[in-house]
Amino acid sequence: MKRIVIKVGSGVLTENNSIAKERMLNLVTLIAKLQKEYEVILVSSGAVSSGYTALKLDRKEHISKKVLASLGQPILMSSYKRKFDIFNISTSQILLTEEDFDSRKRTAIFTEIIDTLLSNSIVPIVNENDISTTSEQVFGDNDQLSAHVAFYTNADLLVILSDIDGYYDKNPNENPDAVILKEVHSIPAEALSAEHTPNNAFATGGIVTKLMAAEFLMKHNRKMFLCSGYNLHTIENYLLKGIHDSGTLFSADPLL
Image (cartoon, rainbow, N blue to C red; front, side, top):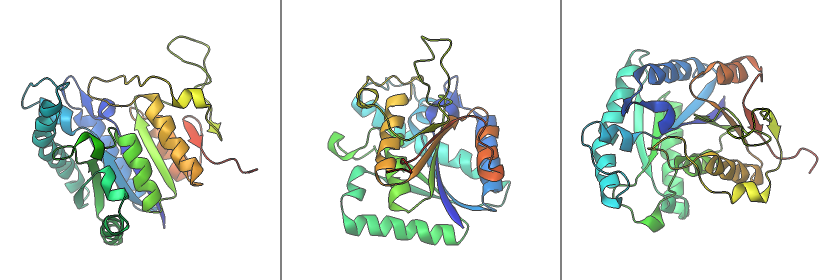
């Protein structure tokens, strides 16, 4: 059975400073369908934005963001549990930092945990542990985290569900004639070093961090699919029907 990592961003999971329950249910429904053909690991943002529903702190302040994450993580997991319970699917929470990928022993532990969970049809829900870590110990965005999870758990594909529906040949916000690139085998250096421009107040990435995640995976001969998290038909068609009608597939150049 193939293994995939699905990463969902705050822009998809939240709306008007609260969890977008219908979108979350749509995501869980999709994962329930995918479980028949794939082992699924979910990397989920949304802890800070969930915490903000309980306490209105300035999320730009370092300690406030940690407080919001500590409040929001159980809210987020509780929301997921209620929806996965509809399908009788059990979930597990795994919080990681960049240091967990720097130690062979620590990496081996979390990959063994994930292997065991998946072998028992349990969905691991992964997030960055930004509550007790220092700035040197964090990725800073779940795009990078999800790419590392995909690589170290030997997943066949990383799917990023975003408020960005693909990688365009030019900035679609400035160029109405921009078109989505359906397949990408290399990313220009200037695109990787551009300024981060998240669309959502609680997001930490934007297109640049997604390109960095894709670059990391392509260097390791892995694949990434970027598409909209608002309309899940694109990824459902791709994963269950083999139809690539939208979104961008990043993969290493087959000629190299």
